[in-house]
Amino acid sequence: MNNKHEQEKRQFKSLFKQKGIDKFASRFQVLEAFLKLEHHVTIKDIQDQLRQDKINLDQGFVLNSMELLCRFGFASKIELDDKETQYEHRHLGLHHDHMVCTKCGSILEFKDEAIEKLQLKAADVYGFHVLQHKMEIYGICSKCMEERNTIVSLHKAKQGEKLIVKGFEAGKNMRIRIASMGLKIGDLIEIVSTGFGGQVVISTRENRLVLGKGMTEKIKVQPFERIKTFDHHRPRESSDIFESPLLLSQMKTGQEGVIQKVSGESILRRRLLEMGINRGSTIYVEKYAPLKDPIELVIKGYHISLRVEEAVNILVENVRFKKR
Image (tube, rainbow, N blue to C red):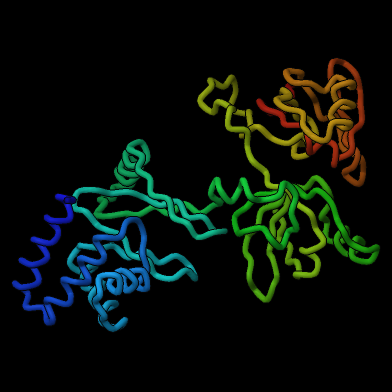
């Protein structure tokens, strides 16, 4: 027997009778069905539970009852974009936030005391008194990431994702159109918005581009994930160090950094390693060719050239402008 749920039922009886809420017995049945369900549920889920309990209540009545449960603090409503409204238990004195998968719609509850303290600290800095708050982090859950192919078509990407352009499966004319927009292999892009008649708005190098569905189906991309082992709390020597790690293809002329990882297909990776491009080596971006490809680099005192599509496979940390 869940003592917390029994407490909720006692408070429900006291409060709803005190306020003279109509159809008390039926509304109590809705509460009982709701308390039997865990996590986040829809009106349909609650009706299914009622039917299992051999209780038949109108959908409008169940919805109205859940609105009352939210009003009196027994439930919380979760409304996420175009998703169906969901409800969760609201236990007094307990708070949590949500991570929402934009692919499968799953919702993960989490609580982080450090984040809670930072929110209060931020409010205090601005002289703001916090009454209530909620945090919703949107992304892709681990299960969906595991199921996803390494390289996908751009039209399958979700809003907010950061991706690397890996190739174009397009004819000559479309390749020319793509090139005229300034989009090329190796570019880091972010999905700004999707869903407007199949169009996708992306950002690249501080520019916004609007791409039609036909074009996004031909552009192949790979998710860009920062390496989790990088220690962001490591002491830094100078304020000119940029957020890293970065892909070598993202670095600017005059910047240098330390190679953290070399990836790519076995033949390419072996060639890069033979050129001296290996973990722990310092690499310097000397200049870009007029069309931004290839990149002229200096490593271990040698001058080498790499195409942007090759530089995408090299991750660099401690990126900074080289002092002259």
